[in-house]
Image (tube, rainbow, N blue to C red; front, side):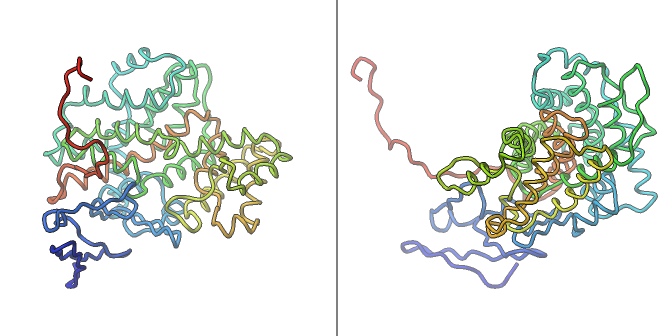
Length: 429
């Protein structure tokens, strides 16, 4: 908190707005008493200039292309650690010791199975249901099965719920995938790592053993790390807002999944791949590049640029490396879609228009290509995002619940409807 304050005067009323300073990042002006002092609200559609909470979890500097989890750069976490280590960091605030890591992995692994009765839920959905629709329903239903971890006032129950969701989300996602493609469910295996287990549950079949490729498992783990948390984005804000009412954690995460489903949020990598499909072949790229540069054409290149990052997306560099590792491992060189993607990548990194506009390929561009190479249909892309982001949602929800200053979310509005008027009987209208 700074000793200085900003002042806002309106008519004959003046509000002294305290300045608050975080560890890093811009200062903020505390407007919590603005309405009381002046009778004014602020107007900020999309909340792009509003800090909705105080948090110690994730920091983003969009201008410099920085993403930190508890102070650690995302590239170091992705290159040197694994997803469950990042989960521990987000939940507890520090990287685990060897013993803490072993214990955490053990606890998560022993929670991967879901109640057997839940398998019947899937038969209630149409075969062609979008896997995200299934995820929203099934995750919300977890609260009907795990009553012993829904009391948000109990720290132990909060942690049990946290572990359960991190552990069970890949299982539920794999079940949604298997149901989608008409194959039998595959149970989790305790001897496998988090990423290996997910790939096994998705691609193993009862009639033959499934051999896990370590390069693909590492790529899957990195995808999870790169999407683990991203500050107060739309889905995280949804989880916090739902949680502020006292809703149980399973319901809050289901709300986050529903928000993530939006094409402007978690559906961006699916949209990027659909765009590559629309372009089709390399010879059509100049046509679409010209359309992207035309201000009067509604066409947009998906997977380029980012609302927050005005510089290079720090996750994209790692995802780019991972993408090429997967393509090399699988020997994919003559896929028309991937040829289009690689040519677009080259143009975006060298064309002055893209450089000036800072329209660099983002994490969604590379993750979409990678997930396609791994064998996932586009309908599963956002589901995988939800698996990864679960720990971020949980960490943010847990932080909010434990914040003594947290109150139920209640945004204000600028009302532009009809003024007060009297009711008129139907026969006189």
